[in-house]
Every structure is written in C-alpha cells, then in structure tokens.
Amino acid sequence: MKNGKLSFLKGETYTVEFVGNIPNGKGEFNFKNENRYVGNFQNGDFYEMGLLVVPSGKKQEGQFANGTYIGGSENSKPTFANAEILKYKSGQNEGQLKDGVEKGLGKFTYTNGAVYKGSWKNGLPNGKGKMSLNDGTDYEGILQMVIL
Image (cartoon, rainbow, N blue to C red):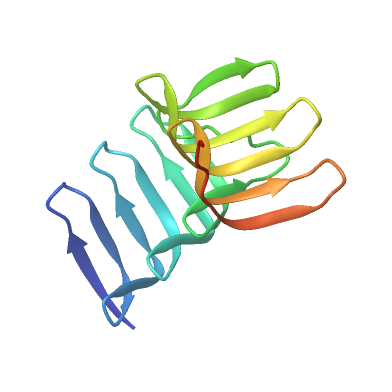
C-alpha cells in the first residue's frame, strides 16, 4: 500500500492508501459539494466504519458497504447529504432528490416495517443497496429497476 491523492476534474479528491491505482485502506474523500467522507475504503468504495460530514456540520457515522450507508448506532438516524423527506401511502423516504425525484442515496421505510437503504435513480431503488424485511431477512446487492 502507498499513500496518495487522486483528484478528479469535477473537483472531487481521494486522499487515501492505494493498492495499485485503487483506493483501499484508511483515508478521506472530498465531494465537489463540500461533503466529506472519512473512514475505510475497499476497492474505491466507502467500507465498514466511516463518517460522512456535510457543510452544515451534520455528521452521519456508521457502517458502509459497497459505498452505501447501511446503519449506525441505535441512536443515530441516517441523514444523507442534502436529504429531504417524502411521504407516500406505502411508506416514507429520506434521501437525496433531483428535480423532486429520488436520486442518489436514501432510506425508504415501508409501512409494513421493511427498510431499503441504498442508491436511487429516477425515483426507484437502483444500484448498491440493502433491503431488510420485517421478518429479519436481509437482501444486499446491486438492484436494477426498470419501468415497463
């Protein structure tokens, strides 16, 4: 492993340990919007324990897997950077929006107790995420949702 800094044209930077050209180990990722993640990386993604800090000073500390926040202590409530809350008949979503539609990271709590935490695209779960059913069953992986 070697320490280094990787900067992107969009203004994002990794300052982290690298294995080859891939961020692995402890480090920091600075987003273009001034959000900052400090913690562990695996294959370029946020991994295990980490801390997400937004410019307002809000902090979200907890477990990350494949770049997605999956939970914290019992007293921590996920507050994704620039999150908004939308309420539906089927439940409530707390997450990032673009043009009034879920896009980015979010957490949807269904009225039946099931919870989805992960990536969203065009208002649907899409990408890395974890679905926890109210019977204790968990499904984790990559989701690709399409509208037919």
